[in-house]
Structures are given as structure tokens and as C-alpha cells.
Amino acid sequence: MNTSQPEAPQHDPRRLPGLLADAGRELLATAAGLSDVALAEPSDLPGWNRAFVIAHVEGVCRAMTRQLEFAARGETVDFYDDGPDGRNRDIERRAQRAAEEQLNTLTDAVSTAVAVFAGVTGSEWDSRISYRDGTVRDGALALWRELVIHASDLGLRRTSLDWDSAFCHYLFEFLTARVPAGTALKLQPLGEQPRTLLNGSGTPARTVVVTGLLQDIAAWLAGRKPLGGLNATAAADGVDLPELLPWPSAMAPRG
Image 1 (cartoon, rainbow, N blue to C red):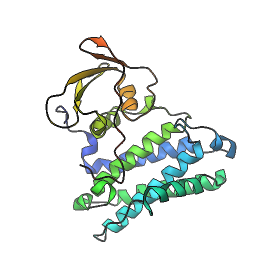
Image 2: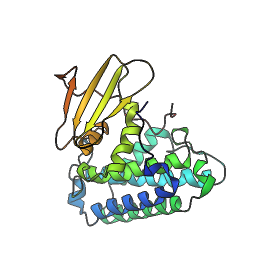
Image 3: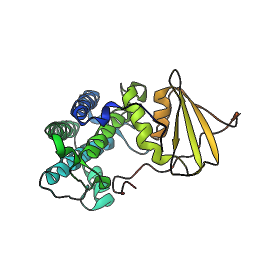
């Protein structure tokens, strides 16, 4: 449950193609010109180099394009062939390619996915897809997350501090599923109104107040390191940031 918030731009499907186009351009511009050496360097995701991040984004774009192709026929299809194991094998395989091939196929995958969503109109946004047992609109929001966050994960010129306000507030909404049971998170972005996140019903056992930059709070919720640091308190005493639940799975029902 979230506290009441103004209607956000991403809730209007007419805005989604533009958000995807902007995010796609930013990611491709960030990755442009990477060499084999640069791709082999660590990303900001533990255990993954930049080649693995790019291979993953390509796979998500192709999977989401297929979701829409089947939805247009009134059908659904698994997000990844062979589930998580197939996803991991494909990332491993794609990540071994030469830089020029990696970047060319990334550009093709991102451009194709953005173009497919740009062609969605009217009630098509409510067509069902298998991704989290959702709709085409849910798929567009998922692709927006992937493009924006992974552009930062490359560890190049973009960071989480470049995430705009609309994206950060959207992450607050989506990532409420990561709030531990029995805990209310009162988020206090500097210079903005506070917002409370509560995962589930009932009265929480405790409230943790998290204060810092909007982008740093969003980055923490997304499992990334806050670049400016955060302050957490409970009952006016300083506490550690709570351990969050896992990221909502692409293969899991929305619940």
C-alpha cells in the first residue's frame, strides 16, 4: 500500500513510448564505442562485466518484443525460452561476442522493442502477456526500468543520480514489494513530501524513516549503492537500513 500520490506520467500509456525512446537513446549513447577491453571491465553489478549487462539488456528487449508479437494475436508465450536457465545461458553466450557485434545487436534489439511499443494503441495496452501475468502496459514499464537502470549499471557516464523524478517515484511504487513484512518505510527525499511504503495489510510493527536524495533512496530500493548516502532512523534512534526482500521476479505472478 502506498500513500496517495498525484497521477504520474507513466500511468498514461500515451507517455510510455516517449519514455522508452528516451531511455533507449540514453542507454545506446552510453554504450556506444565500447571496446572489447572496456566490455570486459567490471560493471556496477557485482559479478557481471559490462558485456554481461549489455547481453542481458539485449535479451530483455528481444523477449519483450516477442511478448507483444504474441499479444497482438491474442496469445501468450514464456518470457524466456527454458525459463531462468535459458536466460542465463543466453546471457553467457551473448557476452562472449566481439564488441562490434555486441553493440550492433544491442542497437537492433533496443530499437526494435522501442518501435514495437510505439505502435501500441488504445485497448492494446491492456492485452495480456505472460510477463508477471500482466499487460502490455506492464511490459512497457518493465522495459523502461531495464533501460534506465542498466544504463547506470554500465559504470560509465550515467549514474543513478541521473534518474529523473518521475522514474524515481515510479520505482517507489513498483518496489514496494521489497518492503519487509511488518515494516513501514517512511521515505523523506530532501526537498520533497514524505511518502510511506507498506507491503501488505495490517499495522506495521515498526516504522523506519529513510532520508536522503530522491535518487539515492530509489537506488537503494533498486538494490544499487546510494552515491550520496542515506540516513535511517526508527523511533528517533539511528538504525541500519532494513534488509529488503528480493526484486519482483519477471517469472512470478504479480500478486
